[in-house]
Length: 443
Image (cartoon, rainbow, N blue to C red; front, side, top):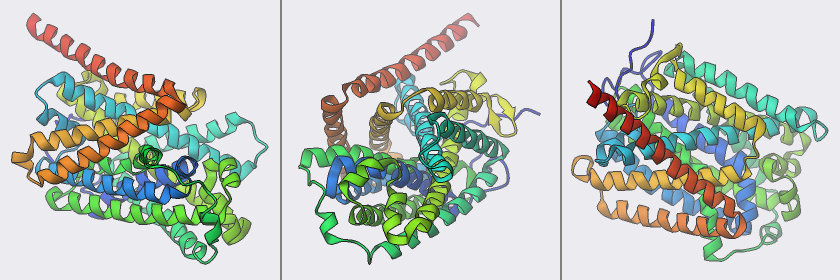
């Protein structure tokens, strides 16, 4: 029997699947996404950009995440729904094209992020099992397999997603905590000074990457329709997840820079955390941390698929995507999820995601700036400090401008891809709304 689509904002607390999610399950979704995308996929790239100041980049990114998480938590507590970010846009902006276009942009960003993290999973699996001798397509096979497996998991239901996420997060936090404890005594202070220090412009530009590593906290609000008391559970879950990840990021960035040289970091930037485990714990440490990377990236993909499923389902229910996107495919899965999976697999197997990852970082910042704007417009209902809203938005805007300026100098094609992503999302929504208007007039 086909599932009935429940519009966001209705029926919260009932959820899909196996009952309400707990605070730890919701926090695990956020930690799973942030740690998987941040440490194992982006720490090396961020260190190459920010040098020995990378820990400051993660600290600034964490402050912005906390300020943004504050707006998210106020909105989620006042408007609990499975729609999350798209529900806030819809309530805040009177233009359906603006509201729907921002939501479509967020969905596109999630899809690109899943592909990027899946390729990281494939790279770690390939190096762990086959070393440096396999063909490039082998890593893509591993990446494709994990996407398909976790899409099926999400089709089973949100209760299953939360329980699996708790197990994955617990495993990787145990491994990373062990690396932190073992790595501190082996830090070479001289190594921390070998990397270049950077100016304020480059430091803030690098936050475009490190904030991308935090961006997964936003998807926790999509679970507010699946918890029994969202007004209490969601804010606590958001701040708990961000606080845990800030400590992990700053600590592990110091461990990485204190144990491997800049040349070694450049060579193994895609597997920097596992490489840092070698001088600390030997080859066994490399293997253990690589396995932790597989847990981390798996949980990040799992959490991001959950978010994409809820967003596409909600957009279809609101008429901001064609209704077919919300129609049942199998279990709790929708046709929109099936099509998104197809797009992910195409990117994994046929695209170089270097420039696209930069675009995803920029579009995440744009989407989350929209959340600050939504909180400002909905302040009478959601409450909260206007000073924190303005301060957080200003700091995020500075990071976005510095990031875009850096891309203009180093990778200008990413600028045009970002513009295309934003304009394309708005254009898709304009076409959808125009069609709805024409169908309404014909009745």
